[in-house]
Length: 330
Image (cartoon, rainbow, N blue to C red; front, side, top):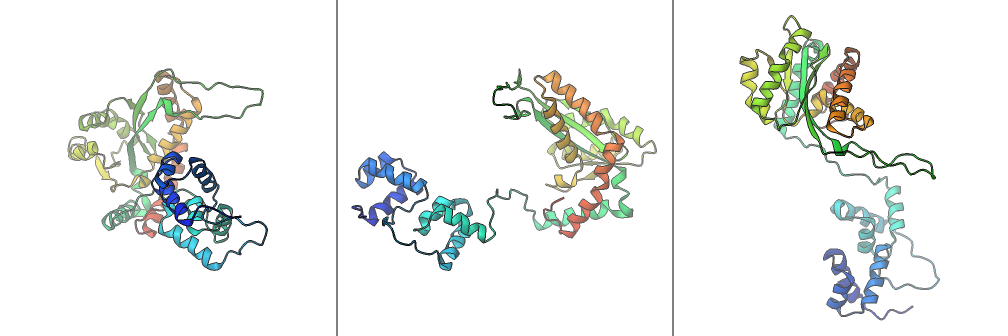
């Protein structure tokens, strides 16, 4: 099969289509070729075909060499974000996307999302390790004497799934929110019990944060009547501004979480569980969402429910130490 268009035309097309993102009409005008031809090249390229290769009838396909396989891996390593199967097929030439997928699978590669985890600085890693070592002193006694506090936000229009299992003859309509609602929550948990959940709508600042602490200090003192407990908070700006106030005015033994370390605050696990339960309740307005939040907080913060969280915290802190403060799975 002959091809009346030269390799130069096709290379110019690939540059304009893949890199410049031009449409068929713009490319046809730029390289002075029929628009129908360009549309055909676009279709073939989308299918993973290398248009630079002139198709031949019959014959045996060229075997994929080890050199080609290594080239695929090299291109993938050089630019992982710009190396779709189609782009790899075009850059290698003479190979289909199916073959590339098979080669990558054979080499042990899997198609998965990019790692979006935190990369800690050397100083941050040291601080994380030192924090964990302090929390594990005296067989981890501090862990069981600490209130872990934090805030959480939840939006009403983001608590629904888009699909559900239903019969072919059914057409179940999704419950829709009747209003837009965003609520903020504050709480603190310990192995011995938790504060009540505080729900508010305003953005958190220093004065509001101090008001939250005032409202719930008595609850913490009731759980630890001897006063032997600690209060942990993270590095939110409102928290940082209130550190001296927490220590001097509220007389709380303050522990500050290392920067960018939500994985070391056990209440994050409870927030996740709370959101999941609110999703299951499918509230449609603010009143229903508040009811769901308060009901499920009460259920999740029973002492028998809280203890497992804290029993696993020793292992989490040990992992952080072993990993020298780096990100870890728990």
